[in-house]
Length: 335
Image (cartoon, rainbow, N blue to C red):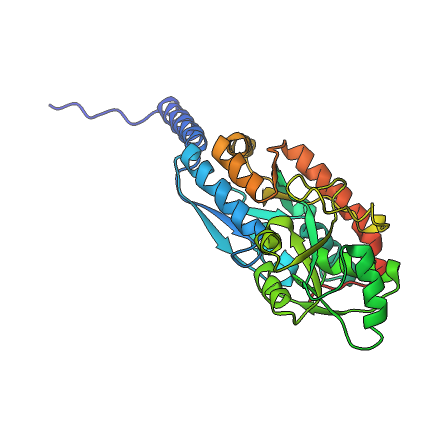
């Protein structure tokens, strides 16, 4: 007579359950250590061709080699960068969707909060690393008879009484919109605002002479400044640019309220795994120190950094606090 197999005991069942849980935990740990296991998307919240886009692509290429996975750049422009930023804020915080933004982050965030239409705040993002410092450069069409920003104020007072003057920005609520409105207030001049979806079309209108004044991060206009097609008026940074040492700062020219630090940095959606942030931060820092990257950044007038997440977060918080009162006073609204 064949003996029947004994029924599973409670002890055996519990032991099997414990083994299964252990295997699940091990599998999770393996999955975490395997990051990245697929393509990473970096959202640039401006059209292609501007400074932020160029620097994002430089870093993406080097980081891709270090991470062993492809990194694709996705340009999502609109509303001074807030459309692309909101796309990342609502993404999964798994390290596969990142944001590469610039100092306009501070003014658009403050503007959206002022208008009561903010879909995201700094708390909705995880700062990863400050990649570079890049000063904002103010420029004019060569037909404008002014050698610097102080001269432009004099010219605008005289010319503005006879014909309308126009300045361009990368959108309502952007840093250039803020800087120009502060300039108008502090110099007592009048100019009409012409918003664009990005720096590239702004520069084209400056070159064509359809607007007289504008600006963006330095490298956007640098080739045109070098050729004489655009005239540099001032930089918004604390010190002069090493690549344009003859161009004074706004503070030197008597406009200290326009001074703002220019930067580009990486963010992710809030609350990502710490190990993922650490890995990305490591690769960003390595890219910032790579000789070829440093050479290319120098050509763009950018200073490589590669900071800690805390340093980037602090820099953005301080900038938001600085621009928030200006946004409120000048009633800048992101559209």
